[in-house]
Image (cartoon, rainbow, N blue to C red; front, side, top):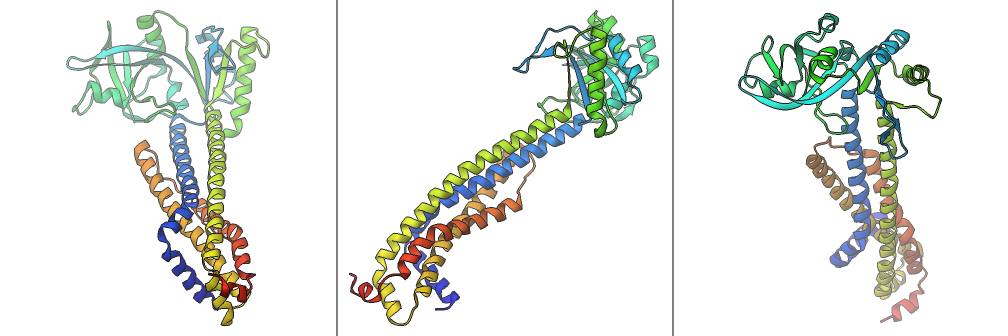
Length: 403
């Protein structure tokens, strides 16, 4: 019997019991579909996170007051100061792109016709370079603004749309934050969401000392931000910042009352989480494929028993044991491949649905699709071989007598 004849016979045998064939392939369908859907979900989520991390800047270093506990919270909070930021700026100017002080506060901002609750962020001119903010209209905060404690502000795109909807340009107009009237000198290009989902454009930037002395009434800092121009310098810059702050605060290693972290660490954590998820998915899918393979073996053994007389007739008219083995092995492989194709289709459809629902990019790993298809065929060969071998070893005379 030729290969194509065996393929035709196997296909006809599967179609005779459509319901049983579908149920037999169900484990393969579930396993393959789970792999495709979950790997795609993990890949799409990672791409979305990478996009947000790029918006923040993977070369960014964050210095915060307080030591980090084993649960991730900040304890022993001793505020950062303008002096510490100035020391970092002076001693590490050869290594850092800039040092931007941060003092945010949530306040009501208003114009004559509109108002909104937003973040008022006191900062320095280096913020533009450190965070790679692009100015869409006007200008950013300057050193002269700091010296004069100027009552000016730069709007994020979200705040601009809330306070000046439909207006051509807010430059030169006034935004009032409580008792303080601020002149709008610039509008920034949008950055989008942060990795934790916050709107980076929903804030108003003002000169740091203007906020500290005219609005907040204190000169402490909540954060110091800095960045490097090359990822190769990131670890060195972080170590130098820690060393300088230890010396300034007179604390020993392991007793720091400040925390220095990088956005790159968040990216590495995302990679670890993705790999962990993929391993768990692989285990679940592997169990489903084994269950599906056992189902295929079981149903093929039943099929051999049901078709014993047919096997005897084929062997009586010239079919060799190799022909019978090939026929039943092809039938098992086809059951497995049909399950694999259905699983890939369902998995890819689920991936598109998840991407639409979660608003992240559609990600389909074609290598994983090919691997899933190959594994499906492998399951058919592995679990179908024993029933096929059993069929090929039937005695033709005994098979013909079988009722």
